[in-house]
Image (cartoon, rainbow, N blue to C red; front, top):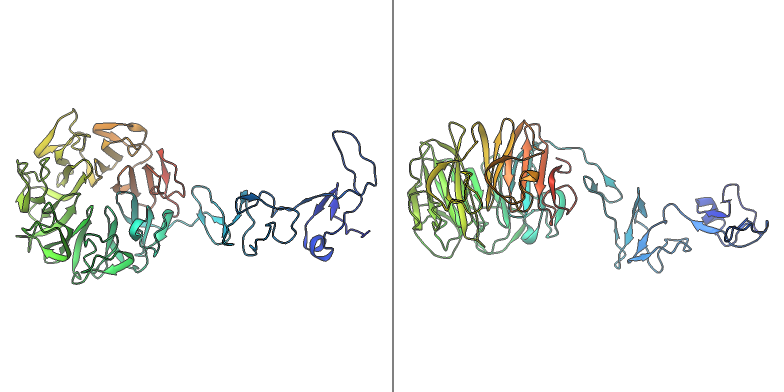
Length: 479
């Protein structure tokens, strides 16, 4: 019988070290004392000791427990030499294709061999689509997370990402927008790049082919504002002109046509100059003019065009009684056909119009809505706004206000149904710079660069490396 090196077999347990396993082959067991059923075993018994290995314990291979008696990999008939058999307390898996994988806990990210806590990257801009979120880093890169159907995260993949991933093809972004299934960014030189779904031509590339990486929108080289709607996109040029492309059944593009699709940018009638910002919703679009006036076009069944009417318009119409707008956000959910519009005024208040079925106008009470702008309650001192499909967010010096639909936890613990008037969203303190309202989730960017999110999370749209919904705001990993 072999003479075992000191430490190879202690208390009847064989250690798999390089010396004990490889040099000696682990073919024999040294004499040990075995305890059976609480009784004392005979000293000198030559039963084989239990075999353990810190790297193999708890490991699973193809869904089965690891074969601890296999000194090579712990996987029967499977080679996983490069697989980190254990990452902290996490068991790695060896897939049917011999690929290595393991699951990391929330607030960490997966590297090739470990679960790491990333060094935060300062974030300078943020927006949320229906089920994904995107942010600009201080270096000019763009990171997105959440649902990735059609490649809307831009990382050359269609797999969901539960933590931020880098968009391929952008290193100098200054503005970001996320729509129903696509995203766009403006570069420092004014070029516009988009990625994601393109079934209606919403990428503006002249085709209907989706892109999983950021690509240039031809002809859009002097852009100062962009907004991705559900399946259309609009932008403002340096000349103050507004151009739109994509889905147009309701006149969302404002070019006096109801042709279903336009896959290249078209001019919005009457807006060849003077515009400073644009917002695209589910089925309508609005633009803020340099004068503080607002013009809207498209579907109007809930008065979301703000012109004291419910008649749709294929060209821009003036929003009534409004001359102090400095920014705009529009929402709408096509499954409900309920749309609303809100502006931030120069006096740092919020005015809204359109549907109020979920409290989107923030006026309190179960009203049917308004076809002209009305004041949202408790919204003084607002510095930024964001519209979700059925709700609103407003950034104030003291934190974050929200109103509208809260059924998915997007208003945190403040409301789990509808908030008919603005409520404080817990977990978002003073010092916020921007907010992003999605379909069931909400995020806010701190002036210092961190991002927190709350609400629905089935696709990882909260960015905390989890798919668990929460009414408690969580930090986005690495931002």
